[in-house]
Length: 84
Image (cartoon, rainbow, N blue to C red; front, side, top):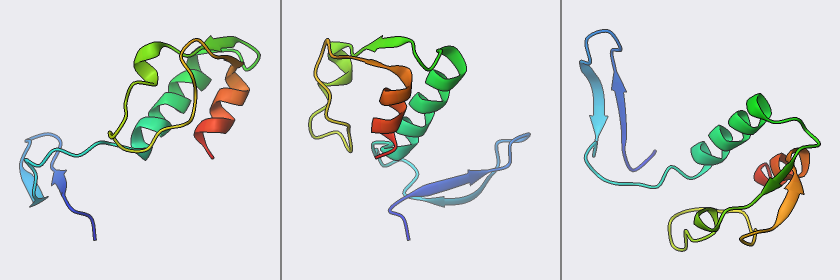
């Protein structure tokens, strides 16, 4: 079972279930999934992506992929690395 979670009724905002809802956690894999989705929706698979410095300066903040600031790779390779 997870450390925390929340389920809300969307139209009213009523909390149906809550466990440690005010605790702060890093989103980990959810961030990777969202990054991959945005890349797929907004980039051509052969488009070159440059890794920004802020994407690699997240030490001790959950999971990450090993990339260096300024590193360049195409979108397909980037998405493959995310899914590893």
